[in-house]
Image (cartoon, rainbow, N blue to C red; front, side, top):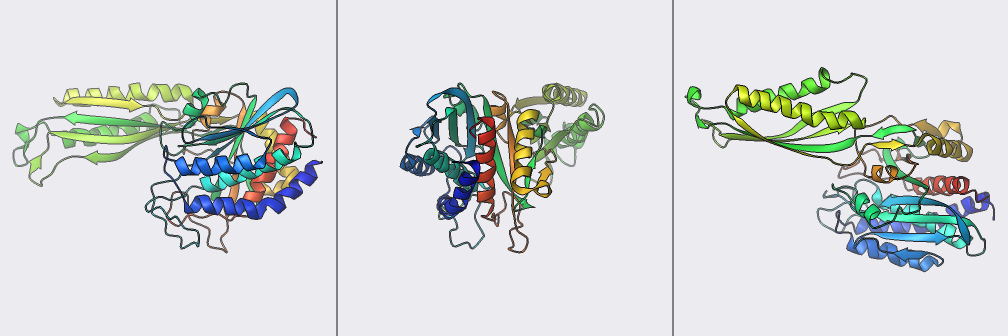
Length: 395
């Protein structure tokens, strides 16, 4: 069987992939709670035959297609969790779980990789090959600490040579596929700051240590890390996103709580930022007679694609759909725990256009009206299949 005949099978499989996607869209589950979702995926994979199916964690699934002789091993990852969002799409297959929605396309990612698994399982029932294709259906991408590290700890990357994955993109027209070698997504770290001053009557500020005034200075001065302490060509975000203090108009509160996020792409810079933050916080609280608590939590790693694997996938996209349908991804300060797999082996994470202005599919990810053009499922399957052929030299 040739690559072209496999790609033709994608078109025949498309209706079934849409059914899988719609079922999962209708029955979404939150991160670390994907019990029914993982059972559904497991049942489908078992129906294909020729796959060694396992459960690396309680809410994830892995399927292995093992060749007749040893060789290179390629892992393909899909994320399966949903978001705590009330759906507002009026789709016939809208979420039946109140307050939970597939608002980021993970239902589509899963349908795509299920389709790839079905086609390869069918093909290799009569054709020998060397190596292995490993299909990873990962839980909890949306909620740090994420599911990727748990999957890796469970051994899903043992013996793997490359890993590839993809994300559907509603802001990009269906038919377009994006790739970039190098940095693509940032690390999403979080911080918590508490300023302990001395509360008192708002009419007598001289008797207090004003935690709000000190906190406001900290918010402002943290921006100096980005604006003055960091090379302007180096991407960095420091954002205070919560500022909680006080209960009355005439009382200066004794404490302030602040929470926020730091986004970086360069690992060395990422390690330096917490030190700079605490230096600012310590200096301002000391200057005004207050005390502080500072907690910093590292999130996912920066997502950095391998140049060689990215070029192979980019060349594949051009061969499949023409150069006009390939675009270079602009790096974003968003995040994805696919970076954990790339920390193990070379690979790439590409984007699949899923938007359609004429059909009203224009809403961004994590929006109550988010949707995808389901033609994107076939596009994704074809890129995965053709890229796998190249990487494992199956032709």
